[in-house]
Amino acid sequence: MVFGFFKSNEEKLKQQISKTFDNYLKILKTIPDDEIGFVLDTAAKIKSSSTLFDSAGDYLGVFENPASVDRKYLITTLNEWKKHMIEQSSTLEGRAKSGALSIWFMSAGAFAFPDLKDKYETLWSELQRGFHKCQVFDPDKDIPRQTETDLDKVEELVESREIKYLEQELTKVIQPIIDATNNNLPKKFTHDYNVSFYLSMYAQHCYEKKHNINSFINNNDEKSMMMRMNGHVYTSKATKNVLQLSDADKDQINKSVSDDKKLETPSDEWFEVQSSMEMGDFSKFLDKTKTLWSS
Image 1 (cartoon, rainbow, N blue to C red):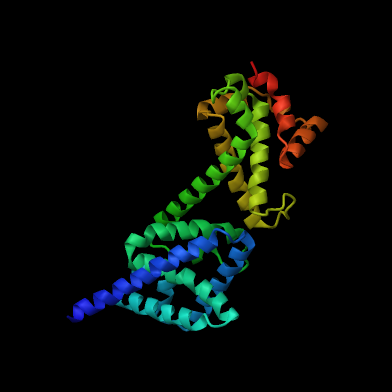
Image 2: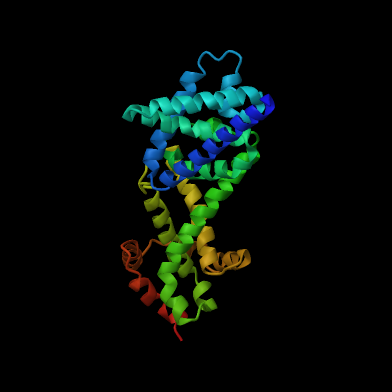
């Protein structure tokens, strides 16, 4: 009977954690990167202040590697956090702290109840948008994990989401060509270096605009630099996918243009086409490439 009581309480806790995930993720998808960064910084401060006098390291373990601590201790901590979150929700400042504490509550909860790990991965793939805006939170040490595999799965979700978004944006550009060719894009269009170049540059613009990254960032801003580097990887893959190119095709296109040609100063026409694309006008790009796709 006692065993059934504890199991019943654990099931209620699991349901609460799952519900918190669902509600939090709905809101999180609408929040800009800088606000996510602020919440993560608040969460990092909670972690730091809460574990200051944790000489045994058990409490820190709940934050950093929940799977490593005694399950009974983990469940007790989760219940205490749930109580704190409810108590803090009565004031505006309390709700902000509760929102930050929820990150630890959900993350640790996913290790207490492994069938919630998918939600943990989705959560951190969304929170990742705020990393480049953080001043206190350090992804390398502050993301709760059991092994590096946990982080790899999060990164896979991030990459998949970003590439899908960029593919959608690029498809808008070439939709008239897709329609005109019955989705049978001519090889002379897809294998043209300038086509890849224009689309990649536009995709990078979409990525930086989405994440509010200044193109003229300070070289000392390592987080934004890393974010932009990731963007180059995503834009390259998205462009390749939209143009239906294989890796071998992409290599061949790059080799077909001499290094000197690639290093040429962009012409006024290039700036005009690129600028119009960034303003949402794709007509100049379509006109410039028309001989490559029209019959």
